[in-house]
Every structure is written in C-alpha cells, then in structure tokens.
Length: 142
Image (cartoon, rainbow, N blue to C red; front, side, top):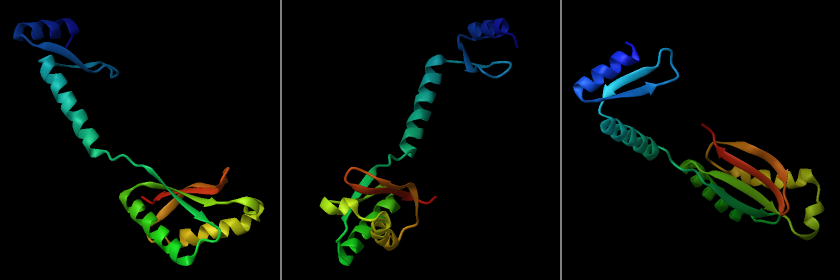
C-alpha cells in the first residue's frame, strides 16, 4: 500500500501511521494509536532490562607466602562468585624483592589458587605483569 493511501486510511479511522521498520524494502508501517505504541515499547524495554543481570569484577589478592588454608578459603569465595556470574581478578601481590622473582615461579603460585577453584571457569585475561604484581582475570565457562 502506498504511503498516501495508508495516511488517508489512518486519518479516516482517527489513528496514526507508525513506521515500524524503516530499513526494510519496502518500509513497514502500522496503523494504530501512537500513545499505545509508545506504552508497549516502554513495557518491552522494561521487561528486557529486568531480564539482564549486571556482572561485577570482584578482586582477590594473594601473596607469595599465603598458606594452604587461606588459599582454600579464597578459592571457596571465588567459586561462589563464579556461580553468581561475576568476573574475578586474581592478583598475586608482590612486595620488595619478590617483584624481581622468576616469572615461572610466580605463575605457579597463582596456579595453586586456580587449581583449588571448584566451579568451571575460563581465563579471560592471561597473566599480566601489573604495578603491584601478577594479575589474571577469570570468568564462568558458559
């Protein structure tokens, strides 16, 4: 139907001509009340927003000499956060001479914590050297 015919029909019925899909060929329109259309679109948007869940990046800090029991507690916390859907930044805090230790040794220290995490995860950011030490980021495997 041509735009002219659609406008005439809309005016005759006391409604509005609303363009639904302007990018399609030919463009798609509806004859309906514009206020009702706005209300329905707002309702759809609100429903879509309610379905999304904001994820947060949580942080866990470990030192080289952190004991086994403390690592278990931190891994339990990390598992809980992963189950909730959060990303986790794990940081191996280095102070003093520890900053100049062998990279392989430092990675092994971080891996000790990663092996204790019970929830399935994937490493989203590989090991990086930060100003405070070695950093990696993990998130829940889909």
